[in-house]
Length: 249
Length: 162
Image (cartoon, rainbow over all chains, first blue to last red; front, side, top):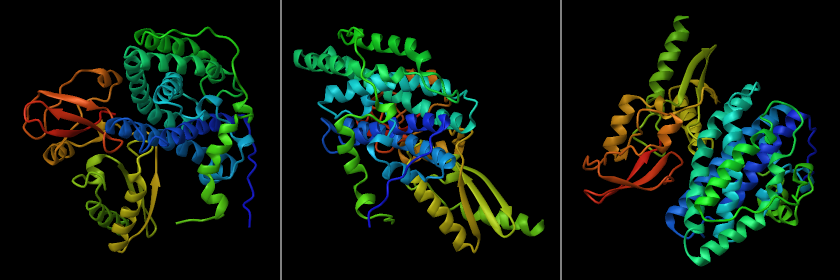
């Protein structure tokens, strides 16, 4: 028996919840891939902790999306095909080297931190409650990523080269974070661009890294047009439910 | 009303034995994650709140509550609430003392954002020295950070300000 993939009825509110839930789960999954491979024990614990925070935030948001759509949190995570995922492309890219992972985390957390802080004042009470937890956690993620980026950029010639390559390669994926969103339950991403840029500029300059010029920006993730990498990630994430439909323990 | 009041008393007594599985010296009420206990009919509704969004102990705590109440012959439903959000200010004074005695430095008495960046020196829970350093903001569980005492050279965990 094959498990039928679900189709989610997406109102603007549902979509706003899924943007945040899918970003958090996919980035959390990527970070969890470092478990057992991190360069030092403290970093192993840190990346696993950050992954856990993100997956926890995703669960709270899926529970809310579940109330709105009638699909449970597990169904939303395990039974949607790639085109139904609403995460931005930035979070689904493979981890690359440590510099790439840290730079991606910085670029994402520099957005997520002010986003959740602003969202604590949301008129949507569930969303505000999730934000009150997430904003404290995200402050740790941002600081951790920024401290590492400074060490890498201002470290050896090799770590500087790798960090600069990561910044250059990831830059075209940052525009999608600020794309306009329908509905007003959550802060407008575009309104956070100024504070994001300030945070990122300050980290880059302390890390002696150059900020790339804004040019062509990749997009499509919010509309379900993903890179090939998401399919591979979902194959692993969804394997159990797809192979043993309805399995529980 | 009398029956309901005594059912609630019995439930509260049974809940006194439910501890955090990762910090077994603290009960869920010491931690401040036990929010409400109310009675409707012959069932007790227990509401708890998570510390961190991804705290994996929540499932286990829910099971432990159900088990403790079931042992006391009480039907229970466990609910989770997110608001108001838990902060380290919900830790009771008794909890802080138990943490220190267990070897975990309790968090400073504030949950303000700025406190995250302050250079407040934590006292070593082993020897009491203030000459300590932070090794990592992320420790063995989501709620702890890693430190080392420069005086007695022992490593220790601290409960993160949150």
